[in-house]
Image (cartoon, rainbow, N blue to C red; front, side, top):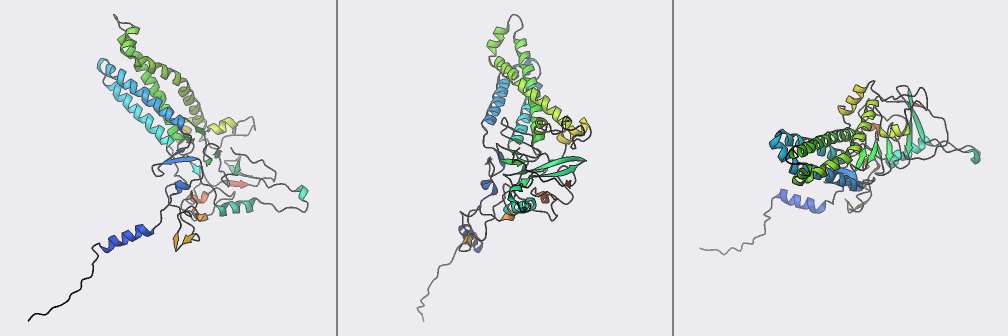
Length: 400
């Protein structure tokens, strides 16, 4: 006995629930914006925020080409002859020096020099409330509130200047770079040859770059002269030697011209390191005795050796800007419960582009500078400074 059964089939999903949920997640989630994409300074970022440098980097590329081409000519025309007739260790030493020079150059150029985050709107408003002085009855006698704070570091009175661009009181030794439009901690100078500011986080690598570059220049120049002298042995002469190795005279001339700038820069910064000063402080005469006979450098470690070790071997502070972090959209700017892509830059005040996780310790008086980003009891450059009240006076807004 047979029965005709009508069976109806329904489609079955062949994808796993996990894959279906992943597909829905990718279709519903908006594009996330990283903080480096909305960075307010005049910087250029590459490799998804890993590389940070100034926008005006043309001279930096010229520096790279000059070093690479000169070294390449040396390896192609001089190293082969010297490895056979003098020692096979010559190209090995030159290669190690070249790698060290380029690595320190890239480390200086592609890193955060010590940019200080700008104040959030809430922080800026709080600073203004601290600065503002109630007006007197007579408007004609009203004077703007002072835009400086004074702190005492090792008995030395130090001014904290207010930055009208970043809306913060800059910490000691910091300055605003007009090229990159950022406040940089322990600002030394903006170097177009490396395409970046030189500050607290990359000064060590900048000094090692000019030191190793000076050694490389001396090494290549000595090897080139040795190569030409060996080729000019009788019955040959220097004209025949230069004809057989035409790149050697070019290398010698380039290095001889560049050596004046490189060696002068090395000597200048060696003196600054020994005195625990920056270029900005030395030019302004911050610690000069001409201003005050009792003026001294409170950042000196007490000796030449300790000052050098503090720069070369001291710890490097972490970056204060979370440039690869994601921008947190403003929850009030949403559409159908999801943030709009155009509103991705509308961030909460406590999640500004440059802030890092805030520690639960109160900031020091002086406002603006986000010392709450450091663990309790730690202040960049020493313990918490003691604030000294400044007398009210009108100051001229300056950047520098």
